Image (cartoon, rainbow, N blue to C red; front, side, top):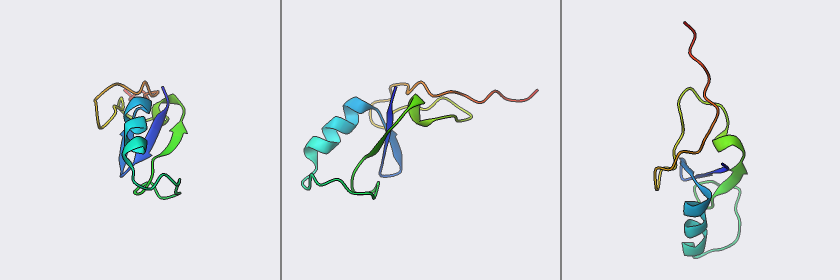
Length: 69
C-alpha cells in the first residue's frame, strides 16, 4: 500500500484524501507540515517494525528488516 507523510506522521491513501479535502489551501507544497507528501511505495519503505497509518491504524504493509540472531 502507498504511504504519505504529513506533519511527521505516516498516512494511508484514504486518510490523506480526507486531509487534502479539508485543507483550506489546496495548492501543493513541498513542506510535509503544510501538505501531504507522497505517495511512497511499499508502505513508506523498509523499517525495523510494521508501519501503520497514524490516523486510522491500518497496516501500510511495509517490508520489515529481519532482526539478526
